[in-house]
Length: 302
Image 1 (cartoon, rainbow, N blue to C red):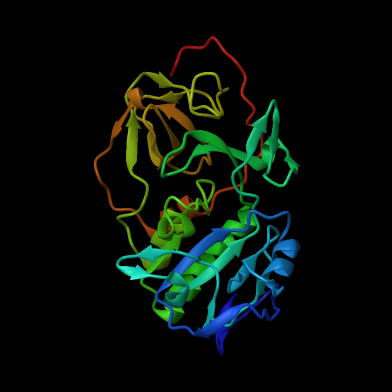
Image 2: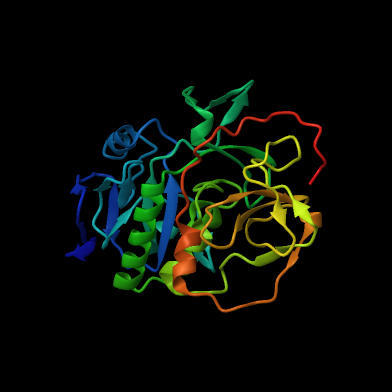
């Protein structure tokens, strides 16, 4: 169990390494999530703990893919993670936020059947999610977060929001829109923020299947294979990632089935009261277990 003592994180698999890249006193109002877009947690930590002629950066915490957490800056000291940024009338979020960097390669390129990060490393299809960023740009590959990473991120958000009475949980793409795109669509930021802040308005919307059967697929068009047997009419799904023609959904209930469906065959369900346990289920997602490579098909487009 994690806790904060004298502005330092304490708990299992937590360590501290001081960085010279920091500012003065911090009175945090926000929590900001990032991805490192680096090769590994270790390489990112090394970079953030090195004083360079220019381009120095840091964060309060680095969250590794195996769940380890390294603190670089105490929570009452400014870390250099936000850069040029603004939110809710405030300019320069370094002076008002705690920053968490998560070890993740970020947006990738597709070269044939391979998925390649900007630094040249290839990743297996099982480590990749195909999705469109909430600010647009089309469907592309993104490095998936691990389940333990998301669980630890949720625990950190709840702890820090409560301890420092933070006002909101944001992404770097929120405060530097058009300049940054982390933590990206593979990270369930809205659900984590809802859990940490006790909000219900940010929970995924509930929809129902309106056709007799509906294929739920690995990607946002009919060329992708189904992830499960067709959904029956009346099945309730949670809207995880809306888009113009296809949306990513999760089947409500103890199924762990999620995938893409054609928007023509779902309709908004009536609002119901949902418990916090359901909020956590939406926040903590498993990393993809099967390849997401496209496979052409002649199946009906739904």
